[in-house]
Image 1 (cartoon, rainbow, N blue to C red):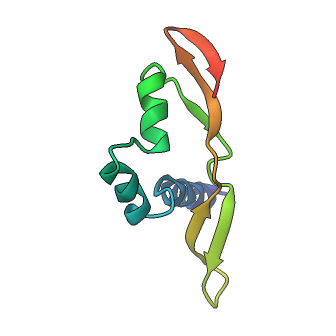
Image 2 (tube, rainbow, N blue to C red; image 1 turned 180 degrees about the vertical axis):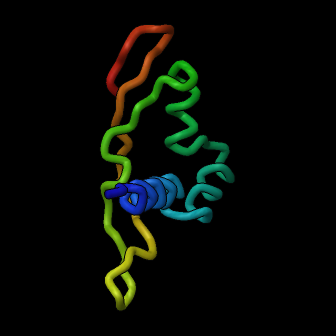
Image 3 (cartoon, one colour; image 1 turned 30 degrees about the vertical axis):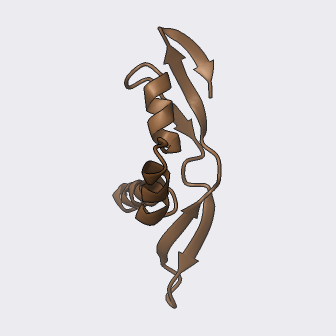
Length: 90
C-alpha cells in the first residue's frame, strides 16, 4: 500500500495556500511598498527555521467531480521558528 497519492495531494494543497489569495493580491501589497506576510516572516526569522502549522486551512473550491480546484487560504499564518537561534511561536 502506498500513500504517495495522498502525499502528492497535500503538497498540491500547500502550493495552493502559498499563493496567498492570488498573484493580484500579492502584487497589490508589493505595489504599496509592503512585503507580503510570508516575506515578513522570512525577513524576521532565521533562514529555514519556520515550520508552519495549518498551512492548508481555508476554503476550498471543488469541481463537479468533487476534486479540489482552488484554495482560498485562511487569513493568518501560524508556526514556529527561530530568531537568532532562539525558538519563538509566530
